Image (cartoon, rainbow, N blue to C red; front, side, top):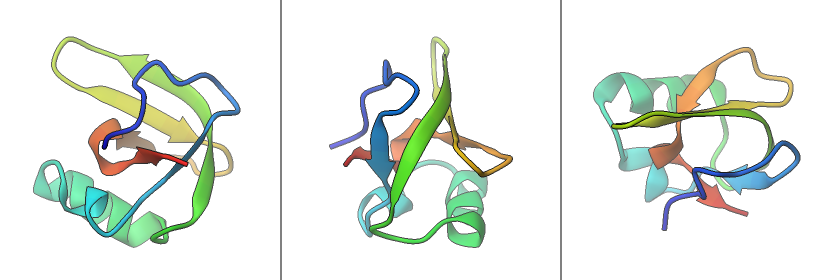
Length: 72
């Protein structure tokens, strides 16, 4: 199950083995290079668009595709 695309700052999300396989190759590569599986991350900011949504996590200077996360 994907994360809530209307998550608020402070909400918790994580990348699972399953969710790490979602999205385009560059989405999967960004997650693999910058994050750890089954680690809880804190939402800093969200951007919701018509066809995709992005999440910025506290302490990480990168925008990720929300399809790579589940609510924690």
